[in-house]
Image (cartoon, rainbow, N blue to C red):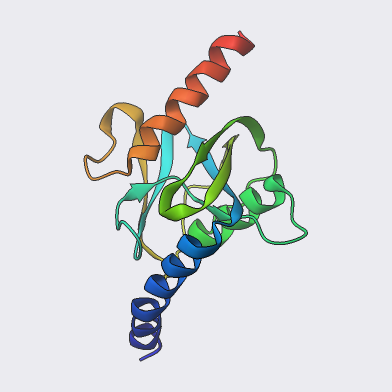
Length: 155
């Protein structure tokens, strides 16, 4: 029953938020986290928005750093606890009329077992980079490009 109520709420909430963003053009901050375990990368399939596979991440809350948000969002969406995240870059987006800055973090995890919140996340899985699902968000490739550039500069 709780799941149905949330779905109904999101049905009305998302169009209202899009209208608000169109009128006020807010500046927002977000994070995406590349989490690796033995050559596999953690992806989540969302239960809202585009319903595609993407990296764990989300909104940076008021008073929270990008890094703190990355740790929190990864744990909330996947159950994976990461502590040693490093910032590998950022990108800007103007999707849905928001001026969005998204920082990208990378970390390793020895944890493999995941635990999801079924309201927000449909599935979580580990993928080799050459076997990513075809139904992934375009930002996955954009984020890996930024990550690759970071690795080249670092080495």
